[in-house]
Length: 263
Image (cartoon, rainbow, N blue to C red):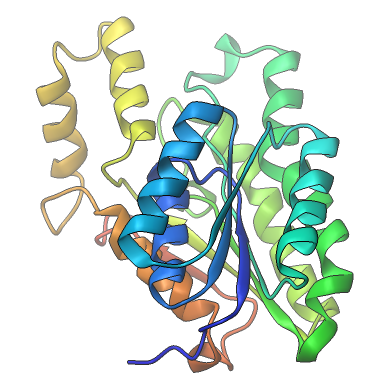
């Protein structure tokens, strides 16, 4: 299926690895010029080169921490300097630390809010004027299934990510019809985020090995396995395309059926 995206320009935050990188690759495979971002400059430039070589598309790496307002402004400015346009915005972020409620402190909450919510708000506010040009654009927020079902030892994700959905739903009404806004709610995918959660569980003495951690995460999924990041990337590309032109304000789960929520 031709998604009719060739020649478009997209920004994907936190895209040096995991779901963000898979999203950037999926868009690049459709002929989109992609702007990728991450804190680790070496890792980011390696990811950009990998995507460029495998897809043949133009890739612009812009390093920086998305908790920093100036980083977000720089991403948009460099995109416009390089490509002269912006059609799609995909917001992704690494997850906040795991832990139970009383193990967190106020600094954890403020940092988590900056990472997950303010990064989206600031980037959207900077990007919207350009997204509206040329007939409009799209925004896809990658969040988590934790907005529908509270997950054990993930109080920060359970609580803070809900704000992203409220923001997405509000924007889907405020920015339509020029800009469509949707969210994706990933379940467990085979990424460094899962590896980090497994390591933290090992440190807490909840599991004995990485193998046990992978098995336990997989057991919670009716399909019996962790997701492949490329599977989620394909949905990002679809939602960004004219093929999804009547999908707006949606929050779509990609979790292998692991959520027990009815909605």
